[in-house]
Image 1 (spheres, helix red, strand yellow):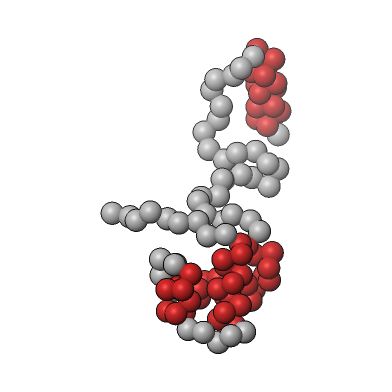
Image 2: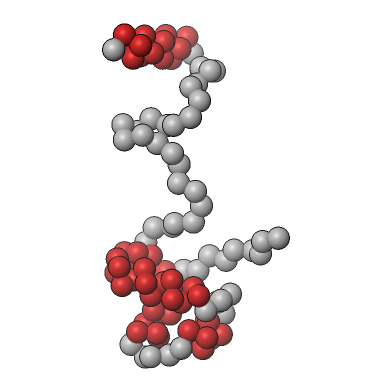
Length: 101
């Protein structure tokens, strides 16, 4: 059973970090004051802030990362349905080149 995950704004995260680092307020107090689900979030945000600075909160980091190779192609089963004959022909040509090498 998992609870509902809340999404917090960049401003909320920065305010929590500021309260903890600069105002020396405890994580329990910050969590209650800002309505956070748990005090651990404060520690996680502080750690992330110390490692990356303000830009740490610019990118959404929830969810799984897609699996891709360094060349940008996806990892997994090969494509079996194509939207056009040209796309299928191109795929088969690349597959032949790969098998030749």
